[in-house]
Structures are given as C-alpha cells and as structure tokens.
Image (cartoon, rainbow, N blue to C red; front, side, top):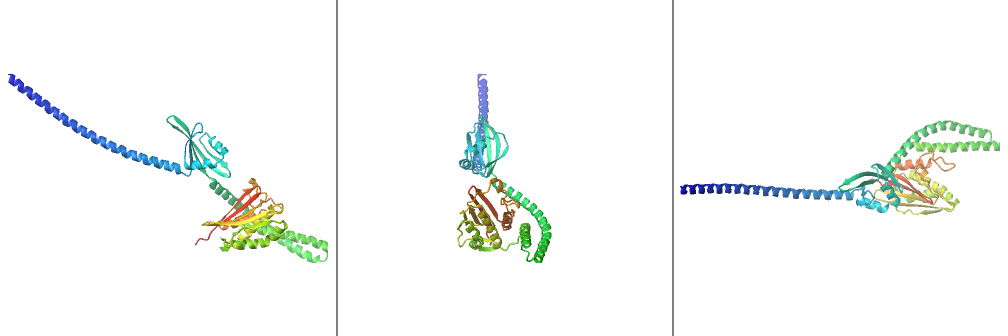
Length: 372
C-alpha cells in the first residue's frame, strides 16, 4: 500500500516537473518574443528620433535662412527667437520702426513705411506650455510697391496719351490755317512796322503752340529704335556743345566723369534727347554758380548714366508725378519733357529713377546691354 502511494506521489511529482518545464519553455518563448519586440521598438524609436532630428534641423535651417524676417516674442515684447533675416532687419532699422512693429498686437496684415521702404507685417499668436506671445513675419515689399506704382503710371500715361493725341490733331488743323493767313497778311502789310510786329508775334505764338503739339504727338506715337553700342562720351559731348551757352549764362560748374571707353546700347539720337532734357532741367534748377555732374557705371547686364545737380531737390509730393504729362513746376513748362524721356527709356526696356533730397537731385538712367 505504501509502495503504491509512493509510486503515485512520484508520478504526481513527475507530472508537476513536466508542467513546470512546459511553463518554463513557454515563459522563455514569451521572454524571447518580448525581447524581439523590445528590440524592434528600440530600432523604431531610434529611426523616429533620427527622422525627428533631421526634420528639426531642416525646420531650423528653413526658419533661420528664410528671406522673411521671423521674430517670436513674449507678451512683454521680449524676443524669444529670431532668424537671420530678422537679426539683419533689427540691426539696420530705427528705434521708431521697432516701436511701431512691436506695437502691433492684433492678428492682422499691415504695411509699415520706413525710409522709403515698405514692409508687410503678418502677426499671429502662439501658446506653448506655460508660454504665450506673438509671431511676427516681416517681408520687404518695396519692389512690389515700385512695380505697382509703375503700372499705375503706365496706365495714366496711356490714357493721357490717347486724350492728348486727339486734342493735338484737333488743334493743329486750325493752327495751320492761322499761320498761313498771318503770313499772307504780313506780306500785304509789309512796310507797316507796328502791324508787321504784331503779326510776327502771332506767327511766333503759332510756332510755339505747334512745337508743343509736336511734343504731344511724339509722346503719343510709338517709338522706333535704331539701337547700337555707342560711347557715352559722344552723347555727352554733343549735348554739352548744344547746352554750353546756358551753363555759361549761370556760371554753372559742369563735371564730366564719363570714361572714354564707357558704352551704352541705345538709339543714340533718342538718348541724346533724354540726356539733353534732364541736363536742361538741371540748369533751370541749380542756383547761379551751381554744379552739375554726369557719371556712369556698368554691371554684367546693365549700363547706367547718372545726372546729378545741387538744386533745391524735388518735393516728395511731386516726385511720384514727375513723369506724368502736363505736371510741371516751371511757369512756362508743358510738363511733357520728362514724360517723353520716360517713354524713350521704356522703349529701350530700361528704367529711370529720380533720387532727390534737399540740395541734391540725381536721375539714374539704366539700359540693358546688348544680348549676344
């Protein structure tokens, strides 16, 4: 009996060991699976960390090197973060500009004018953990403003040109008749000095009006160019030869700093007209004994002529209208000269920029070089 009980106990113990061994194998298998899963998760986390690091570095690089100035501040205007463009902007801008900028507190898009430059300012709010504040994104839109201004100017010039052409033709026909009849009448009254002088005045007035009409028609008609590379000095020499007596009358000091080899690709006769018109305006503007300087510069794509005078300058209110026809500050001016200048330069696919302050005015004429 005792032997049977011992046998049963041994059998139970054997089965218990078998069960334990099976459980151990299962536990080992589970552990191995857990290790494999942990290794897979570790590699996945490492991969995600690498991707996160790369994206963070990319985001930092994009932000720091963005052309837009990006500034992050807290609610007290303390700068938390800024990119490279923002650093340059803050270093070069005035205190008043920064006060205006950080005075903007409502999410909006504004334009701030600073030193004849325009900045588009976008503003947003942020909240992160226990921090909140503002994100400023600032873009220099001066070039866009200049393009818009030029488009408006071109539209105005087109409308005025169409109107002026119609008026000029309507005036020219009866004007020609007046000149013919006045000439015939002067012939009949030859010897009567007083009446002859009156008729000469009429004929002179008619010619003056006719010259103004010719300028209007020149302004309205299409310009045909005969472009070639020419020496700027040749243009200036011809213009100064024609204008020298006017300069001598006012004892003007003229400085010609054009190099002998400086060239420009243009229609020489039309650019002579441009230079002559601007120098004539400079002669009118400078005081007795004033100074006019002309010089040039080149880039890989453009040639530029600068005409500078020490006259009183152009008022900010007038400078935007300077190329519009019939806008003149001269008592006897028609306001067509600079309009024709502008049209000639645009026909050359060039640009003309007035730069003025009290005591100085510079006209910069820029034309593209010949494409070979």
